Image (tube, rainbow, N blue to C red; front, side, top):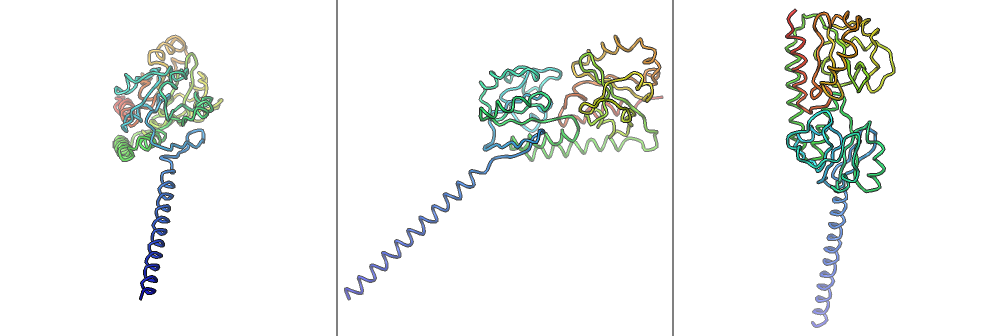
Length: 323
């Protein structure tokens, strides 16, 4: 009987030990599982330069060096830790008092590092040489581009992912597309397609926009024809140098003027360099009073989903014009 009791005790002890081992094993498995799950990054995406950007955690301190993405960022509910000084377009009202880190083309790196960012967003043309500096400092860096309506969509959705406000970003894009479609649907089908050209002032130089650019995208969707598409020239991101001879040759119905500095600068350049030129005066757009200065904040710098107002602005010029 004692022997039987001893065997029973031994079996019970063995069962407890085995059970304990199993529990320990399961516990280790859960810890490993938890570790694996926590090691997954918060977000991974590819920036405009084709570089992979990995955010291990949701970024809390974001510095934005790129004016054109700022409105999209705030529209989805973002709050920047630092931004650049306004160059051509005022920041969103909510960002006016945000610490400044120099200008977009002249970043004060000391001020950027003082803010201890975990993500910096730059511009493709200007900030490529900063990538290695941020990499060495262990700061995530992404170069973005905003030169077309599609890129406004992409950047808005990306800002939604970065700020964990994807639903809001998707809703904004859906509303934007709906309003754009309503504007386009109001254009009469039986009207002859007007031709246009967009002349852009950059400093003392002038260019024409072949696209893709925000202005060209809008005009094309509004069923206008860009007559400068056929012109030849050294292309720079959708722009070619302006030629008076070529402009006279294509002779657009509408000539839109833009400036990459200020609206006032565009007016001065046209008045000082072109207004008295006989070839300029011969343009149909000039003689028919169809030359328009388009506002920089609607057609040069991306206003995010508020680009709907840019569509309305141009549509009102062309389709409310009384011959």
